[in-house]
Length: 328
Image (cartoon, rainbow, N blue to C red):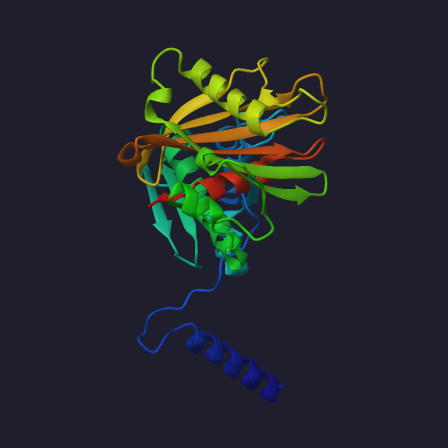
């Protein structure tokens, strides 16, 4: 028994020492968790009442542009008293506490990489108010962390293809399991299509450019975007029968937002595509990056064909690839 106690003490001391570098800086363990799964650290009573309802309303809101209802994040509730040990190594964490009203974001507290968002209030109503007030910041902080993690995972085995980058004057990182499916016979078109086969279909990203004056930010913006992507679909994305091609599903108006990619104003579009007179459809995301230096919009569009399965993480991967773009 004495030998066993001595052994445990030695192991504990060794582990403690191994968590500190020679410079005295604490070495953090690797974070853990599936992509888009958020640990919600909150007392059971708060989780079961209207605070939990408010959290779920923010964190599991449906993703725009999918042809089925899917939540933005999957949630795993951890009671505050058991938020210890391995639980603290979750990559993306939302903590809800009772105390002075506040909101803060911390990085790499218990593991690396890690993002912890903490919301607090003195009572139920104040906590709910803080969550609602900071809803966009909470979602943005945690989604940014998930994208960063996904990009890091994909970077472990990047494609060595340089055609896309050299032709369009960009840097973009995509995994080696994507292949360049189509490059146009006319190099001046500068159209590229990368594709990944998945068990139930395929995921794709298109890269091309259009003149800066091709899109005017006015009341007809949505119709301009639809016209642009449908013309690209007709020219480059044929369907399974003669005369068919990928186009925008007109039964659902695309969602259009303003965002930033590579520190440049960007139009973000989420919607559904289909192939006319064929039973083929799915979600797409489209980013028109304003590149004034080159007098163009750099366009990157991802689309998924994956019938009867969840598409959230497939679309998320496409978004992560597109948001890695840097214009030379």
